[in-house]
Image 1 (spheres, rainbow, N blue to C red):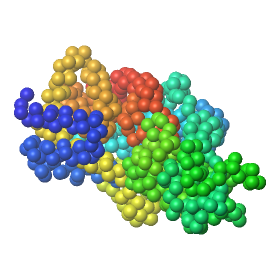
Image 2 (cartoon, rainbow, N blue to C red; image 1 turned 120 degrees about the vertical axis):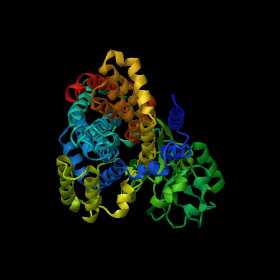
Image 3 (tube, one colour; image 1 turned 90 degrees about the horizontal axis):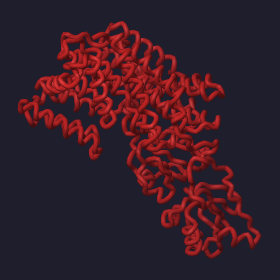
Length: 595
């Protein structure tokens, strides 16, 4: 082992450790890796920064833009609505349609975008059929992961594998639909597994057709009347700040003239006004004493009759959209109530419902929020790109007049990529630019559609793959793998490559796992004197098997809160699917990609 081997393995070990610890963002870790390779002299600055100009990186961001165009034009929503309509009222047929739809959409757009589009419709249709979201959302996410295996652009590991394989020279790179046979097989296997076995392992949480059935909202919601001696008279609710001081949600104001107002109204409070408030009983009693408010039992004796039903109010559930700028902010920092005129009643975070001190809870990607307010206020949330409202998709918010032209551009892109008239990178960038020129989405929307974290992650990690190859580290690790299991034949090495990648992809991103494992897979094939393609194909399939933990992939994270899942639910359902795909890789993959 040379000193360069030690340096590369040291950087690799530290990078994986940082990925697992989650102490730093993955894109920052990737940039630290890039800088380490330069500072140690393993790569020149030109070679290290060349990752940003890599065809793989360019193709990835172009695919994100095309996916964003499918979202903005409403094409994806229309497809989702039509296919879900086919499900009728049969739970079995609904499960099949959800998984087929997610798989097909993920083959041609990034899978997190496909899940974000389908998530609201699946939750809405499940609620209408009294099916718990937890019975539907994990199959949705798993199908999206499996469907990405069907085309070159379906998932970043496919793009990276094709690029790395091409850079090796002497090996024919993967074409657009080379992934299709195994992609279809693993998707069908995943659907059959869920139908026959997996759905019985799924938890049943949040059943009930009302949102309040899904959250343990704080028990005390009551009306209080502003007395003649109240200190609140002559102030607006916002000016009084008593809601923040006593950790109370003011849901509605009913004035003496029976006019209903939201809590952010500029109208001054007067004697006889009625506030609908929600919070701990002790705090309600305290604010009543200090601010001169009369509780129901006090003013019923005076001929007043409280009405705690929230007439004119409604409940919705929402989650953060992919790439939301609100991630990590508290409701106070967002100015949520002031911006939207709505109240958050509960937050589901890491499998638990939070109902206290909601304004101070940082909202993470994958959290679900129960929101109450006037229905006419919900439109602000539906049009806000930072949030995803979990109900029937609103097609009027999409540019459906651009649906036809976006489909024409998409089909042209797929046709060009299939027949190889242009390189895949040029084809995808051309498609993205045409979407913008046709007005399907604006340039600002195109920038927003790109997952910049993934772009920087891939650009920063690609140089590590180059360093592993140039220093012979990839060959060293491949030789070790061959020495351990090579005596059992290529199938045993294939199993080793799959298992190593599958374990890595659970703790680091699938793109990073592909960058690290594809060079090893190629050298393992060469070391055995057989074709490297089966090993590379096994690597990209394993990179899409993030089924064991919610943190394994963004599609698992986005369903975590809305599905009411717990951490252990993923492993209980996903482990068997991992083993099924391993079995298919060992038995079926060599038939399509012989050694």
